[in-house]
Length: 155
Image (tube, one colour):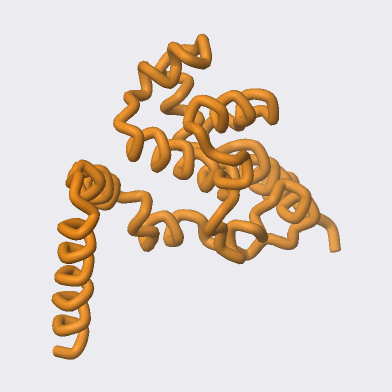
């Protein structure tokens, strides 16, 4: 079966622009940076790049090289594997190798909309939660939220 030029262009676009794996890694960078209370500008300064470049990394518009990802992991104080944690099967299917062979059937955009960790509201909630200094108070708040969620899901 011959692949049309249009199909080939579409496949190459998915390999190099906003690939699901690049977007996942970018989201994890953003999550960790936000949890630490660090701005894009501060991270950019540490990396000797502009905050716009950090934005592109976090959106998955630009790929993060291995050496840059290493630097980011050092600045954000996480293991490099952190950026690949919690990756869905659909995202894994979006690797450039698989897309190049035509193995990808995942819908990246619908996955983004469903991911609560990508929402600013979630990041702000977690960051605020960890500003509570007393562990027992944090634990009680966590239990309260779980209880409310459980009772609402039973409606």
